[in-house]
Each structure stands twice: as structure tokens, then as C-alpha cells.
Length: 482
Image (tube, rainbow, N blue to C red; front, side, top):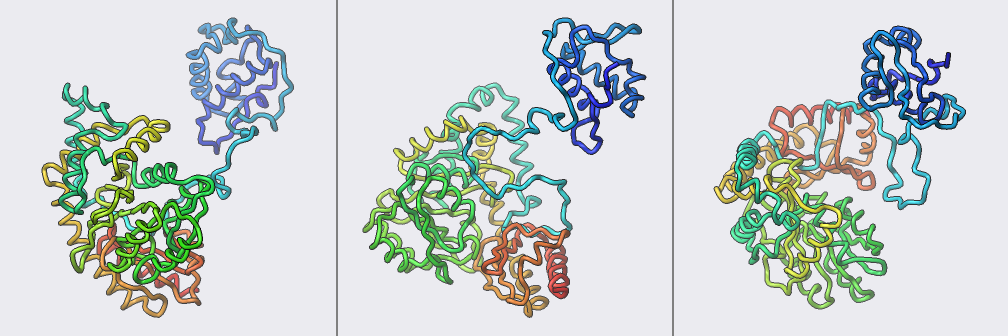
């Protein structure tokens, strides 16, 4: 009798069900030639006793193998390897080589994107999560959006048209979004100037791939949105950082660089810069326009949370002013409705949008037509504007409430400037309180930390007043222990 205890190793801590482990091991033994066509397998009682598992687990494994035609089962007589399996030459087996196919490394040459990827461990949900500026989904009209979505999946004409044109975005959404951006942000565009993407990051990536490449240069702020930096660096372009101060990205520094070398693009977040939340001043906006025209570089404008401004009317986007079509404007509905709603957009001249659409089709042939059309309905009916008006009032109150909490309870530990809008506060810790110590607390998760600046981003929009107070008290207690 073969040593089935060793042929079928069981790991009860594995995420793979035990019956599946048994089935996989039997298949492996057949493929390796250890088990040959016609070989009888132990009965379910005998094998369950050998492996130390319940008999029903072995029955489930045999049923799985039988369904896949690896074995034959003759009720009340025997179970055997199917005759149709080709006879394979036996291979030496041992526990060290008992890895399934995808437990091995891929040992052929391939491109490394991230050197810092670590092995995944069991996820432990922390007690406190401080995001980097997410909306409160509890306020979002997601129910209305999903109701419309479901209605579209049950109508013949909407089913027929759901997948038409999704590589650029459904015409319904692009038409409604063009009107919406014209009304709210002063963008003079048509549907052909829009590409619907799976979020702002996809828009940034597509733009980078078309504008940049080995030998090209892009300027970004310091600090900056890390995911954008990665997208730019992956093109082979040289990334040059310039300071961001209380007035936004330093346009004088940009001009000095432009005098020395060819710049292909400048990435800017003029409205509530990420992560510092500062707003680009009017003077620097004008200067950036002038530099773009003089030195012929593109401006990639990331306007991720334009709608949330609390003290006055917001500046119009750079893309809303007069220019020669050199501004690639990106935005997202994730900051309005739900971070998991992956719908973003890009605004650019038609010839650029056409090529971005062609590039996008190589990796993603289209989006969710039902969801895009449901969102178009939400915009057309005015529901999106009503939601933003309500959310803006609530987020304003939450910003002020957090501001009071921070001043009353954490002023010895931190410094910050209350932002004029947005969904987060950029908090810098005093030097005697290193921010990396907060990262070591298992009950706490902070999504955006800058250890060099000893700072972190405190997203307040997704928390109500009770949650904000609990979070601030937790931070105060943690800092007191340093």
C-alpha cells in the first residue's frame, strides 16, 4: 500500500479547504506517475483515519475527483484512478517538493514594478482607521444609483446599449458630464473631449504613457501624490521635484528648471494639494500658464476634490481658463460618492483623447455601461448636485469640529494649518513625537504618512463627530506614551 499519509499532506492552517487539498494531492500523484490508471484508492473510512480527517471530507474530495474524471467510483466496491489517464513515469516524491504549481516562483525573466512588495499575512482590522480624505458613504446617494443600475439591467433597450462605446465611456455619461463640468467648473468641452476611466489614477497613467518616455522630463511638487510619481517613473522619464509651500507649487523654481532643460510636463494639484491641502495661489496659476506657453510643456491637472471648498467660491480649474489645449484635466467620482466606485474622467483635446482611448483598449476594453448610464441619470436629475450641497455642509462642520478638537486636546504635540476646503487636514508632529511610532500601533491604521516630514494626513470627511472625538482621544493617548 502506498504511503498516502505522505502523498496527501494536510495543512489545516491553509486557506484551501481540506477536501480540496486531498483532491489536489491525488491529482498531483497521478500526474507524477505515482498513481497509475486502474490503481485502487483507499476506502473513505480508511483514508479518513490515515489522514486524521472526517470521513465526509474524504467523500467530498473523491466526489470532486470523480466530477473531474480523475477517478472512478464503483459504489460499495472500490474507488480507482480512471483508466483514461495516460500512464506517466513515476517521479520521486517528498514533502519538500509538495508545492502546488502556483506556490513556486516565476523563475523566467520579467519586469519588476515594485521592489518593496511583502508577503501577505492575515489581515487584522485595526480599531481606528484614519484615511487620507474619503467621502462618507453613509451620506452618498449610492442606493439611488444602484436602484437605477438594477432597472437598466432589466430593460431590453438598456441591455442592448450597455456595452456600446464603453471604451471611451458611454455617450450618455460623457454628454451629461460635459454639461456638468461646464456648469460647475467652467470647462468649455463636448463629449468628444472626455474619456471615462476607472478612476483618476488610470487617467494619470494613460496621460503619462502618451506624453512621457525615456529621455523626457516631468516636474512634480514635493511632497506629492505617490501613485502619480510611480506612474511617471514607470515611463522611463526623469522626475524632478520642486517645493510646495503655503501658496502651492513653486512656479519660480519651475521656471529656473525650464531654462536649463526641456520639460515635457508639469503635474500639479492646484486645488487642495495632496498631501498638504494647500491651494495654488492666483499669481502662481497665472505664472504656470505663462511658463507652459513659453516652454511648451503639458500641464497634467489633478482636481480630485474640487467640489469641497468652505470659506469662499473655489478658483476655477487651470483647465477652465483660456489655453491652447495643453492641459490634461483629470477628476474622479470616488471623492464624491464612494472610494470603491471606480469612475474617473480625463478632459483633453479630441486627438489626445482618441489616443488615450486606443491605449486604454489594449489593457481594458471598456467600463461598466450600466453603472456609467446610471451615474449619467444621477447627474441629469440633479441628484449629484444635491448630494454635493448636503455633503459640503456636513464636511464643513466636521472640519471645524476636528479643528476644535485638535486645538483643545493635541496642540502640545502637533502643528497644522486649517485647510480652506477638501476632506483632510495635513498634520505635522513635533520632532519629539516621531510619526513612525504611530505606525507601530496595531490598533491604528493611517493611510498617508510622510516620515521625512514627520506628518500624516487626517481624513475627516468620512467620520461623524463621535468618531472624530474617539480618534483624537486615541491619538492623544498614544502620543502621551511616547
